Each structure stands twice: as C-alpha cells, then as structure tokens.
Amino acid sequence: MRATIDLPDALFRRAKAISSLQGTTLKEFITRAVEHELSGSMISLESRRVEFPLVRSKRPGSIRVTPDTIASLLEREESDVSP
Image (cartoon, rainbow, N blue to C red; front, side, top):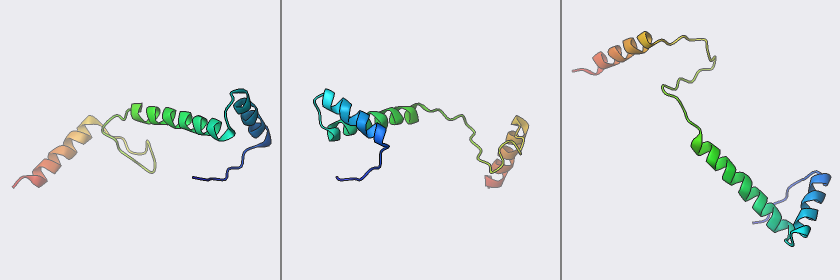
C-alpha cells in the first residue's frame, strides 16, 4: 500500500543514511521501524492492568465511593431483581 508521509528533513536524512549503511531500502527501514513501534505498543496495551470496579466520571474524584456505598447499591440491586 502506498502512503504519503511528511517527515522533518533531518529525520528523513538520518533514516535514509542509516538504511543505506544497513544495505536496505528506505521502504524496508521504515517498515521495520513501524513494525517495531507497533509491536511495543501492543505489548504495553496487553500488559496494562485495570483495577475493578472501574467507574468512569466526567469529574474524577468528585464522587466518594466507599465499600459501604457499594454494598448498599449491590443490596438494592439484588432486591430489585428478586421475584
């Protein structure tokens, strides 16, 4: 697939010089660089842990949730579900 990217001149010159020193094309060099960057991103995404319960808020820290609050909400939810 073809793509047009705009690299700063200095970065382009460095990439071209290094690819030449390695005996590869600029295309091969950039492909390896992108693959390397993406593989590192995938590892970090997979290893990122989320602690539960996860509560999203537009104003983080504005609501104080305690274990008692959670227990009360769970009890209320269970009583709503019971026949």
